[in-house]
Image (cartoon, rainbow, N blue to C red; front, side, top):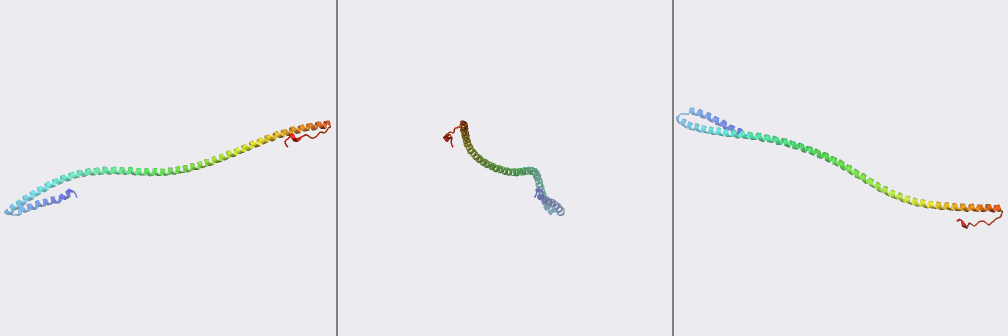
Length: 193
């Protein structure tokens, strides 16, 4: 409740008192007039006191109104700052939510890439093992091939040797036939049979 609304009944009472005093002063006779004058003086004194109280109350009300305006202005400023801070907080919350969503998506991608990398590493290990097995098989094949080539070379050498022995035997046979004499067959111990 404001100070002005508290003081209004006092002002009304003071005005009523003045009016009642004036009416009584005219109506009362001599002794009563003195009594009425004393009461009137008392009423006037009371009215002056009430008027002084009213002026003080008005001054306090004016100061309170100025203070209230200052507080209202400060309140509006603080509310504006609060609204601004709330907007900033909402923007930051939204940005944080967006970043969390992006982080979750990136985490899923990283997990997928790690799984793919693990699969590829496993494939690399299998491929490396297969390559080593293939190299071992190739080494065995090379060794076998070398053995076969050596055996082929030995057999070719033996064939050439046998061919030379057969050619020599044919020559001898032809000479024998030409001379007409027959000799004993050649010794086969020279040739590996």
